[in-house]
Image 1 (spheres, rainbow, N blue to C red):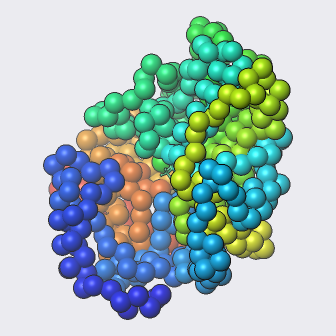
Image 2 (image 1 turned 90 degrees about the vertical axis):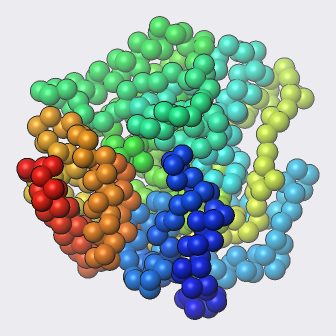
Image 3 (image 1 turned 180 degrees about the vertical axis):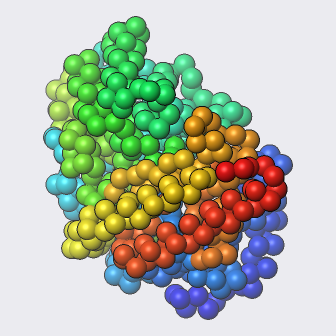
Length: 466
Ligand code: PLP
């Protein structure tokens, strides 16, 4: 029996069923439909338990989402109560109370004049909704050419056609098509990969100049939006140079280009605040997209918060009957919105303050891993960090062996009691925000040992001499 009292199959049976009938996300052609992954049976606080009954620290908090931790009875109860009250209603021509109350609570935390929320089923659908909103907005305003979207290397915005077209990490698009005619790609704001000898300030100037020149070259009348994560999350926790986001915001405002901040990861506490755009980076986007932490992963919910000004422009347009023909069956889902309200209560009543309090310790402890010769850089902000391994620290050039170094570290850490999120040569850490100092010590201790064992393996195999 798992913690929740659910009768479970023997692990081997589950693994067998999955292998025969489940298609996992992001499979390779050689393994599609025939793959097994670590089986997770239960969760409690910052821990999860695998199919063998081994307890692990949930290093990535699921996928940057289980912000208040696993097995929160308050959240489970709210979902039960709401399902018993009203399990579903169509958002096409009816509405419910939890979504209206949640929209007001979210708007209260949002920067600038962001006042209205459109709910979706997750992050991809939130980004997709924002982009289709931009298209609609410009069509209604007679600016039918103003549709191009600026995105950046290192970005991840989702797995629907348009949101995935924005993605810019290695391997994202190698074998997948996309709406390339709509997208313009800019450089990732990754200071670690700036030219040797260049200061971070000069690097920032270069990024801003690239942005401004691109707008000039293409013409602001053809660019509808810029979409960016305030911190590129699955690109490897890329924290942009100081002032970068504010300067890009200004160029967007000056050129009437919508600034869409994709806060699917950074919102709902990851950086110690409900939204990072205003409270951490001092910007007021036109649209913010969110998901994940909004329900701490207890229910698939996401959304976009839209500026009052944009809605007002539409209401005052010459096309009052033009339709934003966009909605999802589960838009404003009552169970999702109810659990999000309870989750927000937890965040406001202690979890956010705790996250802010432990952040410096979390970052400082992880930073000590830079002592290890395989570690090129440890970087991060709030309770998100990345340990980037490089075979050659000077060239910073990930060599062939780097491609699976994250997986090797993950395998060792799994034995030692920590789930890592391996990303090629990087380990991303974003534990539940409730993590204590002692648990941070455990997490970093295991990671240190996992990296050390990996270094030993690489030396023994003769593929690395660090
Ligand atoms: N945007 C960002 C910044 C993300 O990190 C993700 C997922 O990791 C998404 C969008 C897509 O969200 P989802 O997987 O909920 O569709």
